[in-house]
Image 1: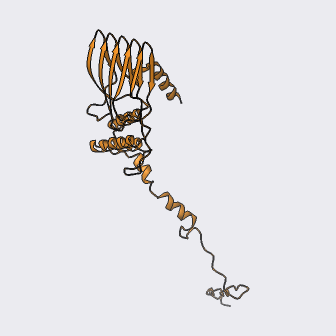
Image 2 (image 1 turned 180 degrees about the vertical axis):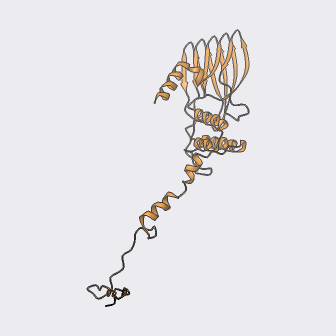
Image 3 (image 1 turned 60 degrees about the vertical axis):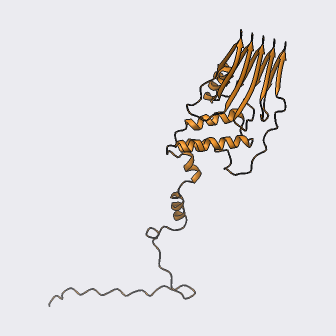
Amino acid sequence: MSQSGPQPERPAPSRPPERRRDGGPVPEPVDVTAAPDTGRAAETARLSETPRAPEARRASDPVRASDAEREAVVERLRVASVEGRLTFEELTERTEAAYAAVSRGELERITADLPSMGAPGANPAPVQVKRRFSAVMGDCKERIVGRIDGPLEAVSVMGDVELDLRGAQVPTGEVHICVTAVMGDVKIIVPDGVSIVLTGHNFLGDRRVAVRDPHPGARVPVVRVTATAVMGDIKIVDDEHHAPLRRALTTWWKDRR
């Protein structure tokens, strides 16, 4: 009896496609691992590739600033002061910071809270009506917060006069003060970084200026003082020299926060 060889494999009968109850074919299963990235995943990827907002880029712009860009920021600060948005002290501080800025990002931070050029101007502070400050055998202490549109005058006769200009608004960027001290003292407090131009005469008296020198070549606000001292003292100081101990304590407290 001969042994028969191996029989060839018969193809398995194909199963008829399954039918849904409504008679239609059942859809083939989909491999989610091979499907294209759509839906929420695609949206997440698209948002992750979105570049940063222009404001964020400008605030951290590392490109070095040019002299022309610094001057443009200083002019914008001057316009903001004319519109009543910055006090004399704020104008001086920001002007000094603009000249010391190295990058465009630093310049952007200086003007971040100011409107763009051409925006409607704010209402300036009321005009400083009182222009003459005098003390005769007494004391006169004034903190000016109004808008200075003209020259000021300070007279001391056997008394003390103190004028604080840090909170004033100076649209022109210059303040003119005529000071006379006869056997008395006159003290003028100005913001840090302003330029002082002192002229006049003294007879058995003293005229002193204790302010920090501004940035060389910077177009900073100016205080022009015409002083006459007769057996009296006339002193012009900035915030740093006015109260050095209080300033040091304030700086220390800010650094701790």
